[in-house]
Image 1: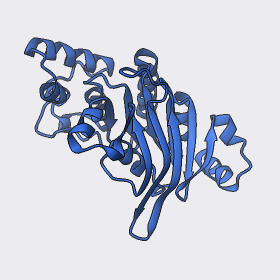
Image 2: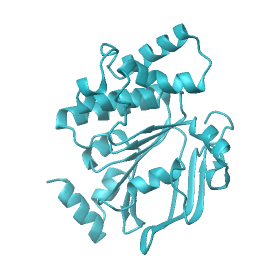
Image 3: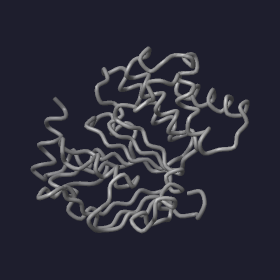
Length: 250
């Protein structure tokens, strides 16, 4: 990892989160190594997206610790947390592009706010980022003028703008047709090879996760039901794991 040489960019220990009487996470412990892509699977409402929001500090845990880029974010104030966030890229489920900005301006936004690049340098950087995701011919289009898959590509380019060492994906292939979903999966693979970033991918797409992840983590009722390679989970004798993979293969 950049900065402190740590081999473990994300370290989560005994992470707990409840909403009222509902215990969403019941003591999750998880590590993501440098350059590793971990896919987090599970049923809807099982705490996958909550886990991502906790990692980025959008929500506060009830207990446990979350170390990101060498900092325990549960102990940081807002300015300190924002510094850590600059080292983390986040691709939201719906891409979350600014409707009033062009594709180019959406990607330029974090560069304008957090760097001192000149206009020329910023424009060059935006073009490079969009080229990496195959969107460099659509600079002047508005989000409403491009497809859902294209919006996710632009969202990914924006997430990469500050050259993060960690990337978080929330359902990157949700709502996409199989071909577009496979293309997004290929993008994740190519980014992994090119940038060697650590990544956490929350997804329902078991077979996509098999293609691009080094390790799969399956959540069930607030705990980790299984963890390992695709083959490890597919051959598991745990009843929930067997059921989850059985339905996923239909």
